[in-house]
Image (spheres, rainbow, N blue to C red):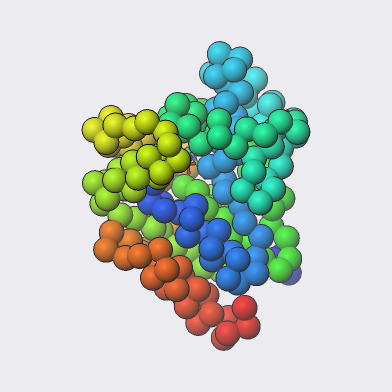
Length: 220
Ligand code: C5P
């Protein structure tokens, strides 16, 4: 039997990363932030100034990457700050449209599924990468609240940001992610939709952990 998976999908800045990593800690599972894989490829795509599908798919299969306690490492170089930039995020949603690249990343994502279990966040965790996930959550919030959360996050980190430009970028990214031909952003039919607009991080985490414990009869 393969290790259980909790899949958490949703649009940009819906809080998936924070929520998913806390859920993972609470239930004692590994954590995969699949967006970081797309961001790593986006960083290479910018560095090499290419959107060539074959080249990027090849890099996706070959690169040496590691996630270590919030750090993102590419061939031993720490690229944590770089991959979190809006520039890289926007490029990520462009490279994410390439079917060959998505295919190349499938195996890499599935390799994170190890005992005692995995919490994976992204856009297609419940629909494509882990269709047999035991629990699927689709996390949403209004575009205004998501833009404000992202804005606060950047300002807190001392990064200059503009709320209007952020809202526009988010809208464009949502549209690209929802309308692409392969693995578009959409809730899996068997997912629980959770609107976090009026909820705190703790409330969202508690809901998901509660659903999980309900399913496993309190074993995890
Ligand atoms: O989640 P995050 O904002 O870091 O993801 C960056 C981009 O990577 C998204 O806008 C999306 O286009 C792409 N992505 C994806 N599938 C995933 C995770 C991220 O297409 N599972």
